[in-house]
Length: 337
Image 1 (tube, rainbow, N blue to C red):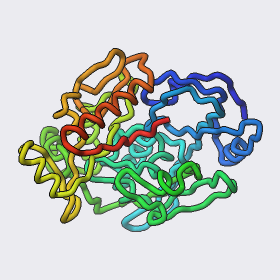
Image 2 (cartoon, one colour):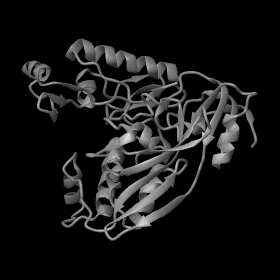
Image 3 (spheres, rainbow, N blue to C red):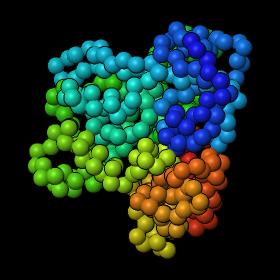
C-alpha cells in the first residue's frame, strides 16, 4: 500500500470539485482494505467509491481510502435466471453493459447511471421504474469495527426509495465489498411504461424490443436530458421526488392544475421534484461557475471551478423556495461531505 499526501480529489468525484485529501490510499483487495482500516496512525478515515453521489464542500483532513475492488463472476446459472456477483469497484454502467452482452436481463433500465457497484445498494439507485431492490439478491459488506465480512440479504438491506440500511441504522458502519444480482436469462420482463421509453423505441423503429433495445432507449433519453459528468460536473439527480398526502396534492392542484403526480398508496402521491424546481424558476439559472442544468432541473452543475459550498447553498435556496411556494420539503439525494 502506498499512501499519498495532499491529493486533489477532482478526478475522483463526478462534480469535478477540486477538494483535496490530506492522505489518499487506493485499495484493490479486501485484505488491503482491512489493513488500511487498521492503520492507527490515521485515526480519521473516509471511504470513497465512484464519487458519483456526493458533494465535497471542504478539503478532507483525513485518510481517504478509495475502494477499487474489481471482478465479475457468474455464481449460479439456472434455466431461467442467473446469479451474478460484481465487486464494489466495478463501474456500474460497464457492469450493466457486461450483463446485456451476456443477455442477462433486469438492469437495462439502470443504464448510464454514474458511479460504482458498491454505491448501488447504499443508494438503492433507480431509474425508469426499476430499482436495485428489484434484482439484488444480497451484498457482502465489511464491518469496519470488527473487520469481519457479513452478508446482507435483500430484506436485510431495508430498501426504500433511495434508501437502505447503509444510509440509516448502519451508516458509516460498513464498506460494501460486492453485490449479487438475480437476473433473467430468458423470458425477460421489459419495463417500458415509465418516462419516454416507448416513445424512444418507436422513434428507433423498434417493434419487438429486446433488453438491449430498452438499454439503448434509456441511454438515448438520459443523454438528451442529462449532462455527461466528463463534460459538465454533476451528480445526476440532486433531489429526491417528494411524497405528499393526497389531501395536500388536491389543495395544490387548485392553484397549479398542471402539477403532475404518480400514485404511491391510497393516501399518498409522488410529485416530480424537477417540476417543482422548474416551476420555481430555477431551471437553467447560472450563478458564476455553477447552476441548475438547462435541460433537467433536478441536476445541479459545476461549470468549471465552482466550490462545493456554493452548490450546497444553491441547493438550500431551492429547498427554501419550494417550501415557501408549495409547502413541500424536498430532500437532497446527494450526500453532503
